[in-house]
Length: 165
Image (cartoon, rainbow, N blue to C red; front, side, top):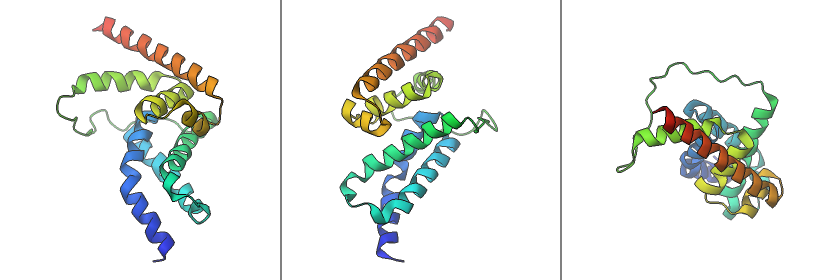
């Protein structure tokens, strides 16, 4: 195994779970998240030799992941299917109410993709407006407006679900 392959393998082992969590928040499906992470790391491996600054790998990988998600959504060829509703989900951390998490994730899945990407990057990944704009290749103003609209949409969806209960 070459040094390049070993370095990539080490990075993949260390960061693939984190990227899978981000992918899940983007697409709302663990299996689809796996596919997105696999596509992103495949693209990363192909560019591995050209990457000079390995200290910014997380940002670059996250950017590839988000762009892959948005690109796929624009093409519209992917059909969302689920084999079963009773698939095992990861266990929630202590003190976290799984019902609230499920309600939030269900509402997040209904937020339009660009707004969802802004919300995930800004509030889950804790990225700045500037970093988010760079990942999404848009202006900082667009990030601010998409995040504001996404929060407004998310709040509306959550209040609707609250009224239903």
